[in-house]
Length: 120
Image (cartoon, rainbow, N blue to C red):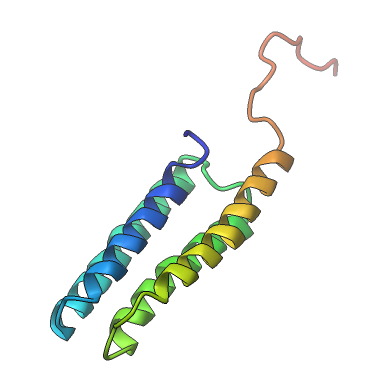
C-alpha cells in the first residue's frame, strides 16, 4: 500500500466526485471540482515530498487526473451518464501501469550505511 496510497486515493475520489456530479447542480459541480482539485494538488505536493513518485513523468500523469477533474468541473455544463467510468479505467491503466513499471525500475532508496568511506 505504501507504493499506491496516492494513486488509489486519487482514483477513488475521482469516481466518487464524478458519480456525485450526476445528481448535483452546476454550482455544486464547480465547487466540488475546484475543491477536489485543490485538495489533490496539496496531496500531490505531499506525495512528491514523501518521494512517492518514481520520476517526473509519474508525477505528471497523476497531475493529469487532477487537471481532468478541474477542467470537467468548470468546462462541462452538464454531467449525465456513466461514461466517466471508462475515463477512470483508462486513467487506471495508463497512470497505474506507468506507476507500477516506473516503481519496478526505480533504484532502491536503501542506503548502505555500513560501508567504509571511500579512500581519498
